[in-house]
Length: 299
Figure 1: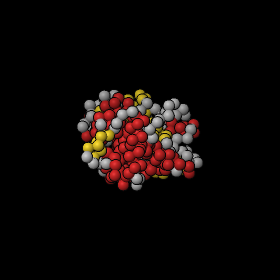
Figure 2: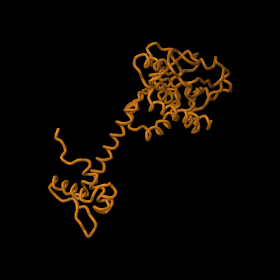
Figure 3: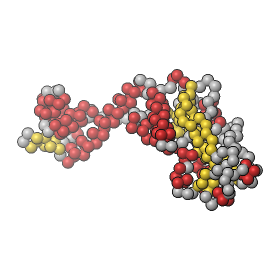
């Protein structure tokens, strides 16, 4: 790889001369002698083979080539500063990447709000997001070491904080025959209809919730279940937080059942690395807690 002839310090000096309006002003701002500033700029122009500045009275002005290079040099210096900050935060244990595993039932609006709040504070940390269903989240902990798992199942030996109560409600398309029934709907009547369920993504799948229907279709995600149900095929238990728009615009209708049309369960933030959990992951959990509290306040 070819080594650069021009140093970052030379570009910094050129920027100061232009931004401050002259050599004397740049020398004062950078705490250098004026002769040192003049020499640095002269050496830079000599190395490049053409002038970057013209002197008009007491003002130093950029040539056309100088304008192009100065613009690029600003990006270069900022990248160098960002790189040093990243090196510093990594030295303090700040994670370069967070592996996040989320149960599909986790309220999407709360998750997205937390991710949006995290990004400007992330200091360059990348997020790897993976969605699982039920025991699939636990298997991810067993197979690897994700930094954070959001799940309703907490395996033994892991640190976990309660993060949110997830509400599941029974819904069908407004045009579905169940919505024409006189409420409350009995389990016997419900058993006659097709139920859409979400497949457990773990290899040792487990059943959750009411599964009394004689006919069931299985899909792989909450979004798929929502679309199938909204098309008029069957009914399903789905996360309330992800359905608000469809309920408000009349695409879906809540079912009033004799046995109760809603149920809830706790969702936890499980720390895959335990006590070794890094500061970026802990920050994200704080933001997630704030986001979930905001959801609860608007219920």
